[in-house]
Image (tube, rainbow, N blue to C red; front, side):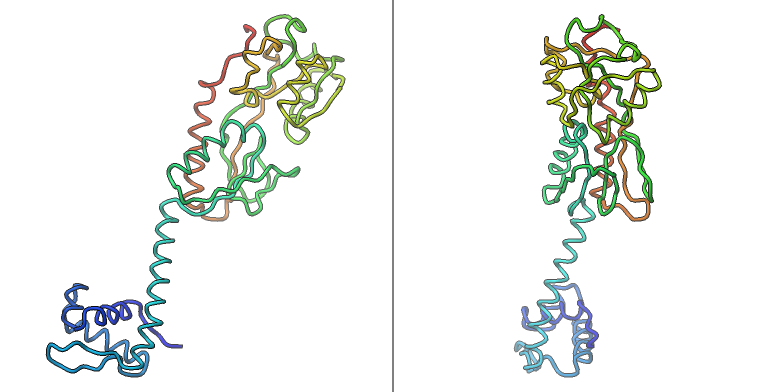
Length: 303
């Protein structure tokens, strides 16, 4: 295998383009003797002369071997430039990021993360994956989930997300509703892989066993069933953030006592170096989540 240095190929290309060793040296910031040394080193590597040197001011000419080396050398130099550019763009935050997410995060936090990443790094590629039934980081760079997951992962808790009771006006007195009051009442069930885990535990601890009359993973579907009078629902505040539920006169929102909550966590691999793009996404998600309590609408019913 021929051992060739890119700087020697770059010097050879400059000699061809400038016509003389002297002018090539001026362009590259080398002395003429340095140019000669680099060409000589390249000739030693390939085992033959690259230039015919007529002497004087006349331009040098490539030998047949020189023509072969120049053709292949320019391809190597172009590839090296592409590599350098790709590395620079990666360090600047371009590249690809794979993110696992779920409904509430996808509606509230993630759109702002995606928008800001694309604004800052127009060349980046962002791939989103719905949260699997058994959340695993796998090949993902980041994963949102409502509790810490097992494995070699690190995580940051972004926000504490309380649950609210969604009913029709008049179903419950104004103000907070004790969880025990929900015993035996018709319930429109929530997301089985996320919210149901938290609510089953909170209701059981309060001694409440509601009647599940319908189950749906879709927050809008749940609210539609409540509006229709099928039953009440317990929905995370984040799932209602920015929705029409706060101003809908067909719905009444109540705090619960004791107040069940869930955490929103962002996970990433603990055993690998994060890309600048992933690190920036973590920063942005943390900033957005920190603003959510101030931006969230208050419950319609007074405390």
